[in-house]
Image: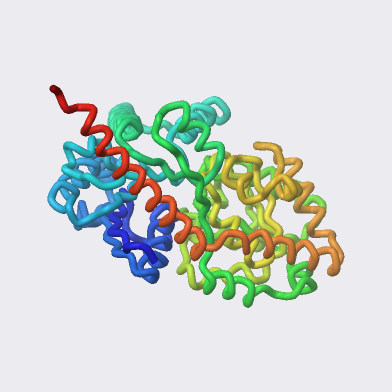
Amino acid sequence: MDKPLRILAIVNLPWDPRLGAARVWFELAEQWKGAGHKIDKFCLSDAFPKATRSRALSAWRHAVFPYRAARYVRCNAGKFDVIDCLIGTLPFSKKSLRFDGLLVGRSIGLYLAYEEFMRFSRRQWPDQPRGKFLGRLFYTFTSWLLRRSADRALTHCDLFNVPNEDEKQSLEKCSAAPTIVLPYGLNEAERAALAGAAQSASARLAQKEICFLGMWSVRKGSRDWQEIIRAILNSVPSARFAFLGTMSDEQTVLRDLGLSLRESIRCLTSYDPKELPQLIGGSVVGLFPSYIEGFGLSVLEQLAAGIPTIAYDVPGPRHIFSATDAQFLVPVGNVKAMSNRALEILRMNESDYSGLSAECRQIAAQFRWEQIAADTIREYTVALARQKSQKPAREGQTVSV
C-alpha cells in the first residue's frame, strides 16, 4: 500500500449510521481504517454537543456550522492530507483555512437539484403547509445562508466527489474543478445478512407485502402513495404495505394516505440497521417513488435482499439500474406505471419471481463498500500527486525578476 492518508470527514449531521448522508462517511471511514488510513471526523454533534429538539435552533446550527468547522480545521490543518466534506460545510479558501492538502467537496444529493425540486413541489402541491410569516422569514434566511455556503464552496474545492453522472454534469457547468463519480454500496456483512434473511419466493408471494424504506416526505413520494395503494388494493385486496424508517409516526402516515386501513399498513418510525434484514425478509416487492435522489441506499438494500424494487427514473436509481435494467424504472410521477409494475410482480409465478430476485441480488453485488473505499483512496492519491506536481509550477509563475 502507498503511504496511508490522513483524512478528515466533515458533515453537518450527527455521526449516526442510521442517517443516510452520515452513513456514507461512516461506512467509508470503517473501510479506510481497516486499510490502515487515519480517519477523523467533525460533525454536527462535535460543533454543538448539546442536543436540541427545536427546529428553529437546528436550522440555525446547520447555517452556522461552516464557521465551527473552519475553526476546527484552522486548529488542526497540519494533521490531514485530505478533507472530505459535504459541499457547503467548508466554503472558505484553503489559504484562510491554513490547509495545504486536498479539499474534496462531496455530494450526498446535489443541492442544486434539491432546490429545483422545491420549486417544482410548490407548483405541484400548492396546499403544502407554509407555516407562520415569521417562521417562513427565518427559514428563508437560513436557507439562503446554506445556499450561499454551497455556492462559495464550488470555487474553493480541489475536487468533487458525486454519486451519479447527472450530478457530475451539473457541477461541470458551475466549477472548473474536476469531478469524480463514485457510487455507494453495502459491506459484505450487510449483504450476507440481507440475503440470509430473505424468505422463499412462495412465502413472499403469499404474503404480498410491498415495502418502502425511507423518510415520509413529499420528496420521497408521500403524495403519490395514496393513489398507489388504492390501485394495488383494487386488484389485490389482500396486499399489505410496510413503511419503514419514516421518521414520522403511524398517525401522520395514515392521515396523509387518507386511508383507514391500519390492518393493511405496517409503519415503523425508525429501526436499528441490524434489524432491517428481518424487517424486509418477507417483502415481495419494493416501491421507491422518490422525486430526487443522490443514490438510493435503501434501493440497494432491498435489491440485496432479493426484493425487486421499482423506482422513479431519477439520477440515483438510474445509476443503480443500468440501461439493461430499465425494467426497474418508471417515469417520474407516473403512479399508474409504478402500480402496474408492482401488480405484475405480485402475480408472478414462483419460478419467474425467483429469477427476478436473483437478478436483483446480482445488481446489488456490483456496489461494494470495500471496492468503493479503495477506489476513492486511489482517486485522492492521484489528485494529491497532481496537486503537488502543479504547486512548484504555480510558485515559479509568481516569481518576479
